[in-house]
Image (cartoon, rainbow, N blue to C red):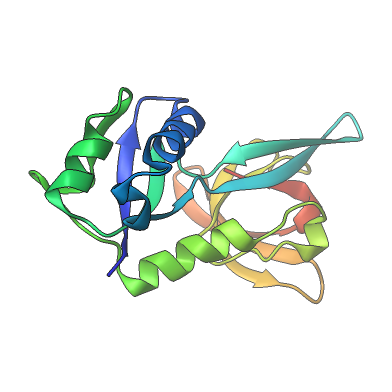
Length: 174
């Protein structure tokens, strides 16, 4: 049975390693043991000088999320690839993600940020405020008000955590 695992990679090698895995397993007996390979990205935007600037941003730098039927052979194959450092877990025993964790990750991967109003901000998301009096402050979303397009973000001001209300178009996901 396949479960989801997280592999740590060298910085900026996620796409290269994903492609290397897919090329190497094609036509081999390992093809059935490797499922999806995710590199969660988010299309974000920010407002600079009144212009909307879009970019694709990796949510988890240096990590691949792999659906695997884990065996010693699969483990050695993945860890043996150049650029892969280790699996998350204890020692040489990779720890699969829980159902709750993978649902949250898949929720991230399915969200589309092309239009700020369509983006489903979730409590706990890290954001950077890009416009208004709290510009350049970073915080955690406490509450998202989809109907009004507003967020309550906890930021630290003068050493105190303070909730501030900002619009969807005033933040970018970190």
